[in-house]
Image 1 (spheres, one colour):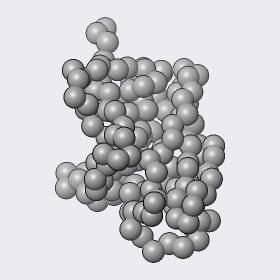
Image 2 (cartoon, rainbow, N blue to C red; image 1 turned 60 degrees about the vertical axis):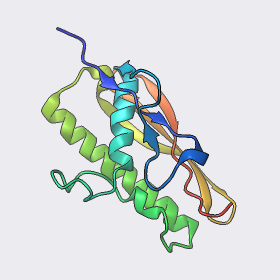
Image 3 (cartoon, rainbow, N blue to C red; image 1 turned 90 degrees about the vertical axis):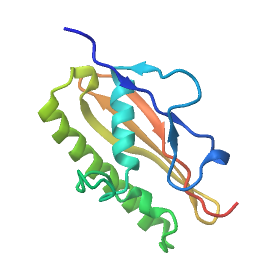
Length: 149
């Protein structure tokens, strides 16, 4: 069976982020990834896609990107939105994987919020640990969402 690869999306530097484009293919040759990195890229792409923004799959995506510019003032409410978005993304990812049945190192076991810290007036650092059915784990820092510097 031939190896299946996905493209590796690179996170942009915070100073290069404009609007909702947190990821890029980079300026170098595209990197093929598989295993835990492929799972992580697929999960993050789904997590960072605003729900309803894809006309062909309006149910795909999460509410996480809507935190940008929102009027939520309680950081507990922000944390709740992050938790619900993770839960929604996990369900969507697992449903998609039931159909495609990738290798176990590319199947999501769970993604959980492992750290949430308030930074400044309206910013936060959030870390999510993704684990595959094969036992691999990777900690991902979600993009910073602060609007004031």
